[in-house]
Length: 393
Image (cartoon, rainbow, N blue to C red; front, side):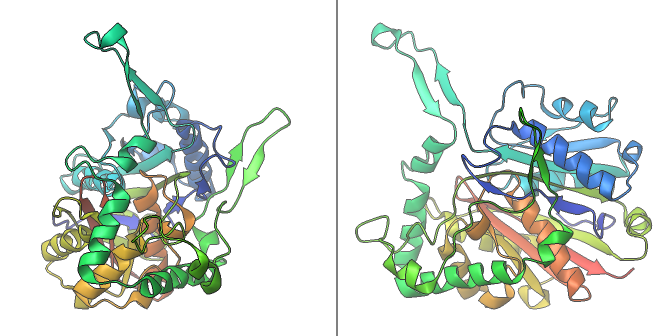
């Protein structure tokens, strides 16, 4: 989908820190987390919430009392009369939310839309369904977070299986996978100071007062030697716990508006134009390959090719994803994910892509502008992608 008049003001894309599951955000509903972070982000930017006339919410893990969707959030943001869609597309949820928000602006239905995402993989729900035709009417159960990782209903295979299939078919050696993993950790560590521009602290309420979470929690002190010592997760495999992501909790969002209004809100700092979005589905049980056709779809919609792109960010639950993308497109690995990525700081599902988009905008702005691409895979061998262009006017 091509977009012509949709933008994010510079500085108006943010993320909470991401915390490894069962960490400091484990006891906080993702709805409460989103409200806390969004109010804090918009307040710090001096944004008049009354300007927002629609909210698009992305979330994939049900929370207590979350049935009502976006209206569980909007009144607590001071938006009593505002509604909008609640979207879930597994790990491509952020791109789907961006598309939902952007379409409203592009068509002129709304001038300013909040695109918000949140998820808590910690304490994920155990779903229980009645089954009267089973012996003793025993219920059917599913752990909402864990079971989908182990079993794709289309293939019967796990997400780990998809990475191992691609690594075997493409001939990726363990050493190369570990090298990409280490590069991402080094990029993350080098970007510590730069993350302060878009990370918004969380205030977790407790009986003795709030606990402030200001930075990512659960990132390993990864070294080449440490990665080499890890055993593969499959006896004959190449993926280890070091070269795959971990479940996490977090929230992220941004303001989507017209190019003219983005210029005004940015106060002369520039705008991030959303040029296009794209989605694709790959061959079954080959999830790490899906970001490539999604990226190509988004680039084609913007009449661009990979040679026109200055920075790429990815959602890469496996280091295999980035290897495949680089090999297929020719885009250098060291020009991808300059702030780190979900491989390092974790994957709370819905918000993962939104944080990567915020980092993409920040990286492009820091280099003085340019074009960028976010692309990331999702359950069901699918992927979503976004093309942005940061300019000074």
